Structures are given as C-alpha cells and as structure tokens.
Length: 275
Image (cartoon, rainbow, N blue to C red; front, side):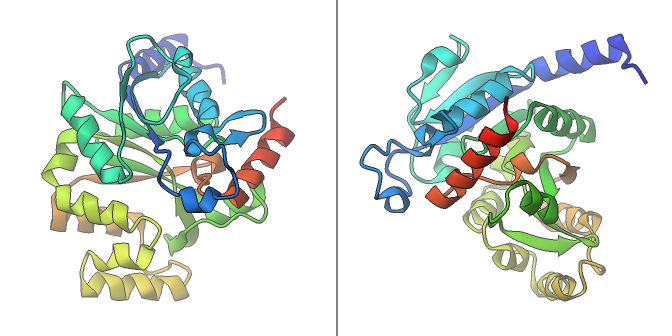
C-alpha cells in the first residue's frame, strides 16, 4: 500500500525535532583491547570497511532526517556534521558523559536520542523505525531489543549479551530515546543499569530477590514465565520510571564494535552488504 504523503511528511517533521547525542568514547578507554594498534585514537576512529566506525553512524543519522546536536568524546571529522553541533570533551565513564550532556541540553523534558558510536551496521530503516515507534510510545526511556538469532545470522561468529524473555532470546540495542529529566530523577538506577549493561543477572538483581528468581527461571524455560510487560511494570512500580521495550528487526542496532574481533565481523558484514 502506498504511504500517505501527509503521514510521511509528519514523520519527517517529528524526527527533525528530535535532538541526537552521539557518544564517541575516548582515546584511553579500552586501550588494552587495541594494544596491537599503535594508531588507536578511540573506538570512533577504528577503521570499518574503509572508513572510521563512527562515520557509518553519522551517515545513517544524517540520512534519517535526524540532527546531531551534541557529540561527546573523541571525533575529529567535524566537517561531517551540522555546523551548530556542540562538541564536548568526554570522560572514560559513560554515565559521567550522560550527566555532562544533560547539563548542556536546554530542555530536559524534551525527548532526546542517545546513540553509541560503535554500531556501524545500524540501518536507516532500523533507526527510523525505532525512533518513530519510541516517539509514539511516549515514555521516559525506550530501548530496542533484537532477536539474538537474527543477530547471529547477520553476524556469524559474533557474541552479544542476550537473555530469554517473552518466549524469545534477545539482545539489547545500543540506542535509546530518553526524557533527560527522567534520567536525572533516577540517577542511581541509571548508574547501576549502565554499569551492569553486559551482565543481565546483575541487572535483574537490582529489582530484588523475587524478580531475580523469576528471571533465572525464565532463562531455563525459554522466557515463558517473563514478558517485556512484566519488566516494564516492575520498573515503573519500583523505580517510578516509564520504560518501553521496542522489538526491532535491525540486527545492526544490537552489535557494537567493542573489540578488534567484533570490528572484523562488522567490517566483513558491511563490505558484503553495502554497495
């Protein structure tokens, strides 16, 4: 069915109103992982299929009618973004960068898209679909989840943190649509959640004994006793923050280039799929 031109125009206008923050990392964090590369300048500049990893991310954002307002961290190709983009010096700790970015945001109740620099295989359609659905969900924090089997099919040999929920095994994406004030209001929760992003058991334990027991049971029953709605309701009840899990069909949102091995997989994927 042809898309309604007015609906398409409205979607474009809505996306244009969403500020984007890209977290570009630092040149010192994770240096041990890249010790064999004497020219390492931070993950943002790691070469992937002929160009710096973050350039793939910037290009997708630019092509999705989104505007990068802030880049925090190491990034030297400043001619590739809007002149009005604000560049901030980053810290090694992600949460320090989040609080710094929020300090610079003028309207802390305005939905803002946070994007990691290390997801070069993210697609335009995947980013647009997630952002549009996250806007419609109208919550404090929206996060994409991707089928782990779909990620493995797209990136053979890759490893991503995954868990069973709602009858499927999923991995968490590396973008978020957030209401910055909600993050400030739940600062301790955000600090703990980000510190344990790669440790789903630790994440689950933050919700208490009953939930961790249910979570662990879900891991041996293929997620049959735990749903995304259960998790969303528990977070709202215990932490007073409205969260929405959005199922994405873009595996590129789920695999971050956090090691030389993963970057080789991402590079091979892009060389095969991008004409």
